[in-house]
Structures are given as structure tokens and as C-alpha cells.
Amino acid sequence: AHRNLCLPGSSESPALRQIGQRTISTTSRRHLQNKVPEKQKLFQEDDGIPLYLKGGIADVLLYRATMVLGVGGTAYALYQLAVAAFPKKQE
Image 1 (cartoon, rainbow, N blue to C red):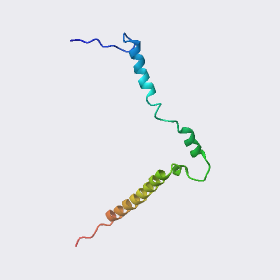
Image 2 (cartoon, helix red, strand yellow):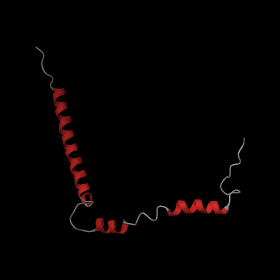
Image 3 (cartoon, rainbow, N blue to C red):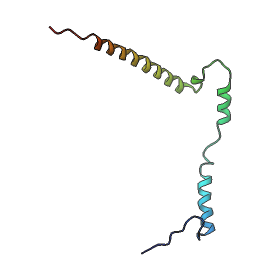
Image 4 (cartoon, rainbow, N blue to C red):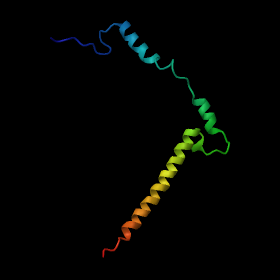
């Protein structure tokens, strides 16, 4: 039972090809609007806010969490290094 498979550009009907192209090309256009110009305006504004905090509260929280984890992890690593460098004496 061998089926004939249509390869792109072969004998498939032009209507079928047009429907396939139409559904692929127009589905995402309806739902999204272009926000790039307003984002460009926000990030290029000279208002004294550092670039990494201009995204709003989410950026502030991510920045603070990164700093806390970075400083805390460094402190913990130094503490563990000191514990390993000066082992307890066994009696």
C-alpha cells in the first residue's frame, strides 16, 4: 500500500497551497502590536536611572535578588574556605 505524497511545488492544488500560506502568515499579526518604538523611547531617555533598572519593578527585584545571592554566595564561600583552612584539633 504505497501512497503518493505531494512534495512542495509538485501537483498539489494552488488553492490548498494558498490556504496553507495564508494561515501561517496571518495568525500572529492580529494578536501582537509593535511595542518597539515605545520601548526605544523609554530606554534612550536620559533620566538618571541606570539602564538595568529601566524595565520597572521586575528589573529592580531581579537586580536585588542577583546582588543578594552574589554577595551572600561569596560570603558563604569565604566562610567555608576559612573552615576548611583551619580544621578543628582532635584531642
